[in-house]
Length: 283
Ligand code: A3P
Image (cartoon, rainbow, N blue to C red):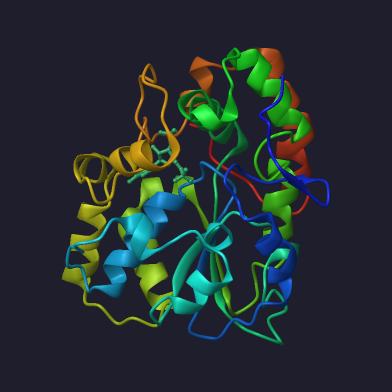
């Protein structure tokens, strides 16, 4: 089984990506005003996009879809990125070493990295691959699990991606967040993102943004929920039962993982990142 992904320098990229642009973008100039939300897939990207978007508008609803307000950097291509209004806010799934401005001393864009525990990511990723026609994936959970453990999924091994960014977490221009912390205390997460963006919104606006970014409210908001937009853009399988905002929980992995699979993720991912001081909640 394979997900039919394009590769660059042994890293699997994603369908529809502009590989030529990815090759040259390490040298692309970024500025201090530019903000990137960086994630491994299925780690809370859209959630963070919506938070950033609402911070930019001071809590007011936008008339644009969140995917247009905070577009996907490596998908866009150079001209479109250049044409974005300032301050630019974009999402990316690229590894740290592929990013422009990754040397903070040279070109200090700002980066919000969001990491999620590798077990919930795996389950969310499995449904993601079932959902989009481009993967041509019809396999079982067990089949997907093996691809995930080998890093034969978009943007490679979870542990490589997360660790590369984690090693730079103390840089002034990087804010490292965890999905599980956002889930437990969204208001604090919104506050720290606002602080990081240099915004001085008052407490009631921070709370308003948090309410708008709850799982339930985002699911109901067509401009914060990618379902309709993606249906047009990337062809969702008609029989896909769960939406983009699927469960939004911590611990759904328990409904899919065998105990052997759990031990393998512990051995190959969890222990590896814990050695670098990175730990997650799993329930
Ligand atoms: P599940 O599939 O576990 O439900 P990404 O945007 O990086 O692709 O991540 C998608 C995951 O984030 C999905 O996880 C989705 O439900 C979850 N998510 C999106 N918005 C959320 C929110 N407001 N609160 C909690 N989880 C959210």
